[in-house]
Length: 238
Image (cartoon, rainbow, N blue to C red; front, side, top):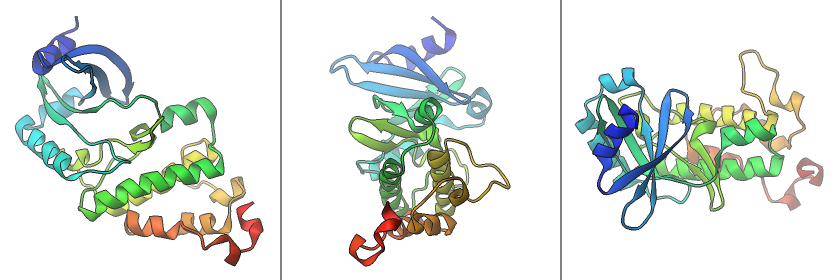
């Protein structure tokens, strides 16, 4: 057993037992732990060593628990807790079976338009609720969007703020637009890129939505809802 895994076993036991390590996300290592009594699974996200060194783990744990107490939404994965395992700080959330948006795009490329809009609505719905509580994501990216049998869920909302990183609704909206570009093209946005409508045919309302700079998720969600089909030319939705 590795030193980190042994430290995690000490930190989480005897209530949880470490089952396996899963594919890392950037510098973050991920482990799945199982509740000893009922078999429920927990995802444990390990912060990088350099970041762990500068964190007061007790303050971080309190901040994560405060976020967890306030967030209750079907499209948000609620944080469970946090702690320290040896030299590393970690936070936890329920394990959600499925895949990430990053993995799906990597395996399949661009996402069909209707499915992209469906995913966007789910993401914005969760963020709208978080923003109404003045809780911001701060690190929204395809790795944090989970696609499961039960729907689309956003993970790690509020964790950046708990770590003391700057997070604002406008940052989240810029991240949502980057996600949209990647879903519709299969490629990460780059500086100087062509407008999205030049690389893929889009409904007029979505092109206009992509050019807007939304102040928060609530306004972005309202702005992406087109008028009823009867009041708009049918070809815009073809």
